[in-house]
Length: 247
Ligand SMILES: N[C@@H](CCC(=O)N[C@@H](CS)C(=O)NCC(=O)O)C(=O)O
Image (cartoon, rainbow, N blue to C red; front, side):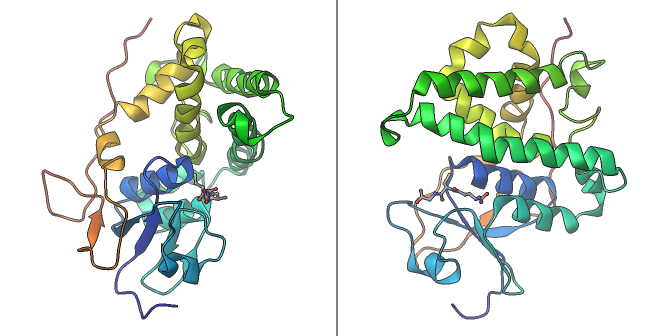
């Protein structure tokens, strides 16, 4: 264990969907962390010392708590921002259950299918097309949830407002899009999920989320995250969703 942290330190990897959702929650709840970008092929010993799992993201809080699961980092952030408690549907048990089911479906099923067709060479003996089909079926299900919402601004996975399900799943759908974009882009039926994803990737906060950093080393100056060009204040800036044309 390293000495007492005077800051919240986040070990992260820019393109990792788990790390992206943790960073997204950090931004949206106005938290500030010191970012340590990790090269997954050369993980820093400081990171492995606090969590031997060797996965990102990992948060080492000011209070020396180690949080090495992305969903738990999201919850940690949300607990610190009472304005955002509706994201976890604090007072709505049924919605909370649906959110949990969707996150579980993403983490335990969708991500596996995605990996098995995106990184097919790592899974000899598996049929990538079969996994692609299974991933598509799940996307189709999520698309149905988004379809038929009263307006483009209310197309969220659970109810008419964004929730932890949206925050936790969109980076994985984005990753999927990189491998099977034609199916989503050219399939008119999939418009709701396309628009839902675009809300995140075309929002004003996406660029801040995805800012490029060199892999961290002990000799680097600490990098504060999020970093806003317009202000040095640690307060979060409001999200601006892209304009979506109603059809
Ligand atoms: N359940 C973990 C999964 C995190 C995870 O698997 N992250 C990947 C990167 S996207 C990782 O660190 N893999 C380890 C490696 O590639 O060595 C979480 O939600 O934080």
